[in-house]
Image (cartoon, rainbow, N blue to C red; front, side, top):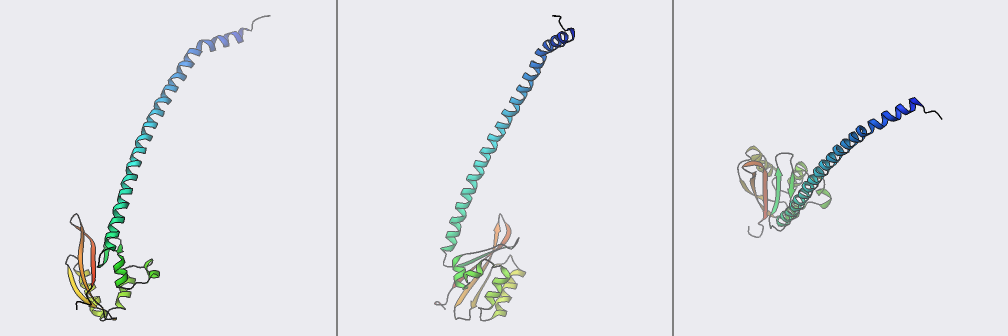
Length: 181
């Protein structure tokens, strides 16, 4: 049997290049291992950040729940209105004082609320004048007495709401003073 010179030289060249191939593969493997370690480290840091944010969110929800329960425990009807985005928040006593039906709460906005209130006050023009006066001078506190068509009398106190010194909205407190009057 004769040896194939082409086959022998090819096999010899591959054998000579084998250490270089192994070296390149080892370098690529090491690089991939470094990349994997960096990705695992980044994933760990992201996981810790996510856990921290989840804890912060849980604490914020608990604080909000406590705040809303505190507002609902007040004897006053409280309406908080934000200037930006017109956010509206109110407590259970507010809904009770203004006799807002449950089916209206989901779609309640400032215009619908005002329309509902105007149907319940003895002097709608005077009530609207009070609302407009506050809107014209939102940095001033206001106090007035409102007579309702059903004979109840409410005190209304409007206070600007500030966060870090910046006016963000208003808080209006309504108190039923019918017995006192």
